[in-house]
Image (cartoon, rainbow, N blue to C red; front, side, top):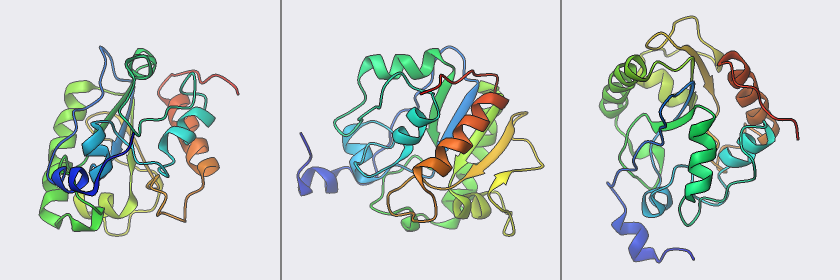
Length: 191
């Protein structure tokens, strides 16, 4: 389907509802929705984003999900029935993540900690090192497992799956997702 330029511009500032089921063992946290994601009302919806490729390659979805026109109910059910949830650090759509202010990231980190305490995932994966460094006041943090927990959950900081992030390949992300799933008690399927 796709969206017109006007539809994408109209999505600026909109939010995207969390994808959560009755239990959340593994919580993925994006930085914030992009305009395409907000227009589609589905996390990581822009074509070129590697989140769903990595998720599938890690064995965490039954099929390769294409959320560009919105997430199909069966795909949402597949993820939530496995105990996988998706949220954002800041739930305000922008054209680029660097349009977010430091205060928004700090507020988002505080709200994410509360959300993690409520949902009680085993593992939380934040997808964006720079946003994590700013939001959680950890300027020297490195990608990988963090010493501190988030609301009782083990915390992994991984690369942003955006196609603009050349530092992370789909295989790198899939390996991180698979490791996080195993630590959360999920058993990925082998592909």
